[in-house]
Structure formats: structure tokens, C-alpha cells
Amino acid sequence: MYITIDKIAEFLTSKSRVCLTINGHWGIGKTHLWKQVEEKINADKKVVYIDLFGKESYKQILEEIVFKIHQNYNKTVNVTSRIISKTINIKSAGIININPDAIFSFLKKEDFNNIIVCFDNIERRSDNLSLKEILGLVNLLKEDKECSVVLILNKNELNKQEDNAKNNMQTSSNDKTQHDAKQNNNDWYQEYKEKVIDYKVCLKDNDEIAKALIEEAFMQDEKLIRDNGLKSNLVDIVLKHYQDICDSNLRLLLKILEHIKYFNERCFQSHYDKTIKEEFIIVIHEHYLAIFNAVKDFYIQRKEKRNLSNMYIYDIVTRYLNNFFIINDNDEKKLNDIIIRQLSSKLLLTFEKTYTTYFDEGGSDADFKNKIENILQIRDNKLEVFAKDLNSEKFLKTIYWFKQIIKSDQEVSEEYKKGYFEKIDKIIQILIKEQYPYYSKRIKLLIAFSKQCKKIYSEITKKHNNEDKLKIFKYNIKEYPHIFHFVN
Image (cartoon, rainbow, N blue to C red; front, side, top):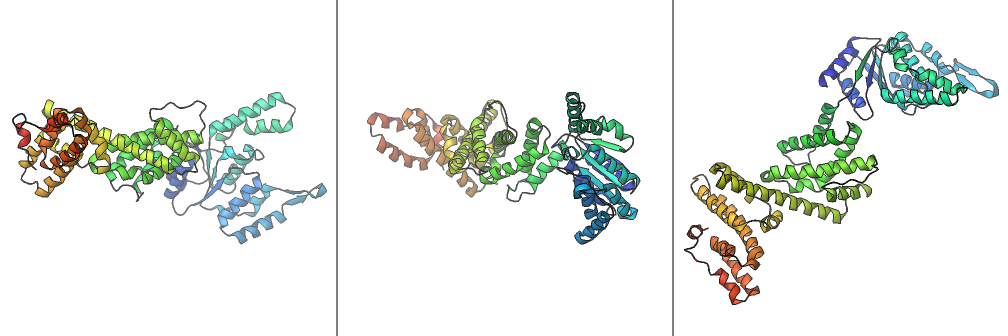
């Protein structure tokens, strides 16, 4: 795509009296492409951009061209007044008729030196302005004023207009207006491409433009997480969803990016930590997907109801969209709770995988140590959700060997150890509270593991003052000797 941009710019800079068309469906990025071409065009060239959306008359277009060439309102008024005063005819009943073609006779060829005129949204012009008039103007600009012209259009939509004109002709063949419409659009491209159009560019894929827009949205957002590695991952996620969902519609993508930015700032980025980067990417992938679907359905109405695995997130985003793009406090809390549960769940899967890799598959000490370090850096607001579902025997075995590894590492400071052991104690206390009702041997192991965790013993026994229940705390040091050698 970037090669195409350079080639288009070079084509228009090096040549004069040429007409180039940029064709593609709505939203694919034709105008965005043109703006990039403009930046590459030699400074000696001046671009006059005319948006034909809703334009009613030939005269409107000419006046805008004059204004943009002179860039001076008073001068434009003087020029157009002088032109109009010599080109009007007063018909019966006082109706003024202006001959627009005569306007060009008052504009010197020098006025168009190094000028490129770009007409955009040709298919969105008013029905009062015929395609034949537009193409006639293009030919006049090329041949008489010797300037280059760019046409940005959706050929498929123009063909539909042609088909509609033909259908109208069949239902009312005597209607002169409909006959003229047919003549204006009938096989317009074939009729004019040899006479007017010199080169055409057809946009069928805009992934590179989309990626550039996504990168701009993420990389230049100073409020977003300052982790370019993560931002690169997020760009890839958004691009994949765009390719799957948006049908190459860049306008829709730009809207979605605005809503993603809102949720990033309001919810998502507060949950990010480098130590859980992999888990965060998995979770955010699902949330971005829900935003894509909800925003698309908001702007492009669906006939059938969606049935998504993440409907609860989709529904929150939909309520936000229907509430003037503001998330209510209740939904914000729900969304944050969902993210915490999801991250904790993904972290638990990471723990299980780390356990299996090390103890069952013979993984390396270094990899095992790094994975456990990351897990133990989990934030306190996710700690309880994570610990509730832990298998305590696996956890105790894991942290026992984790200590053996860091004990042999001379570079590990006491402060470093203390930080991890404090987090281990917090997890053990949660495990004791959660698993006490089951009266299993796990409780013995948990209390035996850490002297600090014995403090919780008295708190729990006050609530469970039954002698039988207290027996579970009378652990046998001979039964699990390796646990008692782990003193912190």
C-alpha cells in the first residue's frame, strides 16, 4: 500500500493533464489514502479538494474551485461577481439563468498552473447534479485548463444508480427526466474512461491502512499503558478483529477505536501488570471482541439477536452505547469484577501448567523459578479469587521447591525473599480459611508450612470450638518432614 501511495504521488507530480480514479466500496479508506498521497505530492503542486456530497449544482462546484484556488474570500467574490454579471440571462418571470461553462472563460489558464483538483464522493452528489456534468467538467479542466484531476468514487454504487435509472425507464419510458438519467449514467465508465480517465486505482484490501490507524491510536496514546511490547500485541488483536468483523470498513474501525480507548482508560489498563502479560492479553482479546460486535451492531443494525460466549460483556458495552457513551457505576463494577475473575482464572491455569511442566515433564529450574515469581507478584485485589481455587498440596509442593531454588541462588537478596514469602503467607491464610470446613490434611500442611500462618490458627479455632475439629491441627512432624525444614 505504501508503494502505491508513492507511485500515485509521483504520477500526479510528474505529469499534467491526467485524470486518475480511486475506486472502492464505502469505508474502505479511499479518502484516507488520498490524504496520505497529498502529503507525498511535491510542494510545487497545489491540491484543491472538492467533496461532492450533497452538491446541488454545477455552479456550487465552480465557486468552490475558485475560492480554493485564490484562498481569499473577497477576491473570490469579486471574481465570481464579475463572471456572473457577464454570464447571466434574465428569462421570463425574472428567473436568472447562469451559464456555468462561461465561468471558465474568465479564469486564466495560469490560474490552474500546478493545480490538482480532487473530486470525492461522486456517487453521493445530489440527484440534481448529473454524472455527465461532472465528467464534462473533468474533461474541461484537463483539456482547457491543463490541470490534473482525481476522482474518488464507488463504482459499484454508481452502477446501482445506472440500474435504477434503467428500471425507471422501463416503468415510464416517456418521462424525459428519467430518460436523461439513463443517458447520464448509462455505461458511464466505458463511455468516459478512454476520453477522460487515464489511470485507475482500485482498493480491495485496506489492512495496511487499518493497521496504521490502529498503531496511531495505541502508540500515540500517552494515557495508555507505557509498554510498547503490550501495545504491539493489542494492535495485532484489534487488527485481527477488524479483519474478521468490519468488512474493511475504516469508518467503523475509527468509531470502535474511540470506544476501545474509553474502556482502556476506564477499566482495562488498571488491571495490567507485566508479570501477568500473557494472561492479560488473553482476557483483553475477549473484551475487545465484545466491543467490536457491540459497536458494529449499534451502528449497523442486526436483524437476528447475537448468541456470543461473552454476551455479559457485550451487554455491558451495549448499555454503555445506549447511554450516550457513558458506562454506569454498576456496570463498571461488574466489568472490573469480570476482569479480576478472568485474570485470576488464567493465572490459575498458568500455575497448573507450570506445575505439570516442572514436576511431570522435567522442566528447567530457571523457567520454573521465573513462572512462580510472576505468579507471586499477583496484585492483592486478585489474590483471593486466585487462591480460592488453588490445590493446596500442589501449591505447598511448588513453593517448597521454589525456596530450594532461590536459596541456592547467591544473587537473591533477603529483601527479595521477604517480598515473596509475605505473598505466600497471604495465599496460605486464604487457603486455610477456604479449606478449613473440609478438615483435611491440607490444613496441617498449610499451618506447618509457615510459622506466621499459625496466627490464623487461634482466629479459626474461636469460630470452631469443637474438640473433634481441633484435632486436625495436631499435625505430625514425622509425616511431612520436608515441610518443617522450610522456615521463613
